[in-house]
Length: 459
Image (cartoon, rainbow, N blue to C red; front, side, top):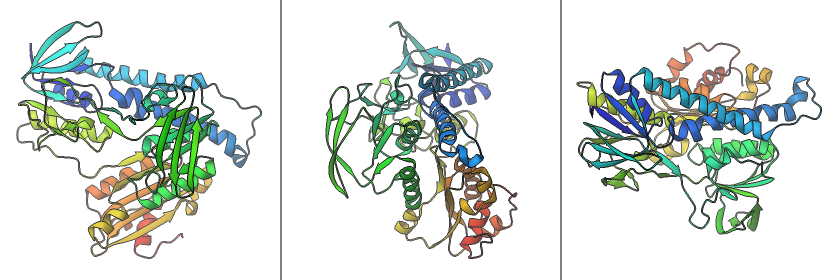
């Protein structure tokens, strides 16, 4: 059988591209070595959000209950059930992807896929058996894995990646996290909420270094209040794996010290998972692609994490649809990722889209800033989550939205409006004239827009 499209990898790029191809009437197969849904659904986005929700609920009941007039005696938790719930959520959704494959008549083949030759994929099953399948087009969507620190390789116990952090059989008493990106701060929040002594080390000046500087500073203030020790602008200079613990020598603004913990979570980024077989041209280790997502091998395409940043599930799915429609929809010109939301699901949540203030300064763009604090929102006060702010950046001359940055409750939901506003090139005048319901958290967007022109009403 000759497929119209063979997809290697069943994550947010692979399964979305496969289903879209099938919707367009093409014969499609997906080759997946682990399970449908990829890292995001099985070992990333989804199970971590289940853990974060558990942690937020436990923290609310233990730290904020009195605020709501509630009291609990001997409130406990079952660590195995906390972990178990997150796995159940992932299993249920992975089964949902497999159902979608059946619904759309996508052939789902379990095994490791490699490009054996042009138009041919070799699939090696778990038992070692091999088969060759043929396709007119091949989409590589094999994603990434956690990047190791060479002096401190993963061992699954004292030195772990995010995958092991989701299923640790016992909660550690002390944890050190290297890297304060989204993965690092999310796990810092989860483990701290249950009482683990957490230290997070970041060599950049702020937590979440890719975010606006004010956001990172605000998050560090919140984390410090919650009990997370944040060592920013700090370098790790020596590592020692003791087997049942890890010792790290650090240099920071307050001097040098040695940090010891039961577990070290390394969260310094990702490394590509390349398919075997024919070699493709790479760019810094990731597959290099052209305007239509083509690789250096004829009829072989790539998208998602394997083709480089941004390493996000939603951008991977966007790219997959663009790629597949470029292949099978006459006249369609694929788009590359432009503006995209970035979300971090600790508490308070962080979300952004567009330019940071730092980037605008570097580019020499004249801009104006509008800010509004959650503390001035009736809805935030009523909900007991009045921490954070909305920060909007507009062009000085025309008032067009350039960037949006939110830290606070439900920031990851609020950012969708800002993404649409940026895509539609809305201005302060258009956002002014959009009535936002009261009482809502979204009112902060309206008020921040008013503040950019110097006439916020409620602050």
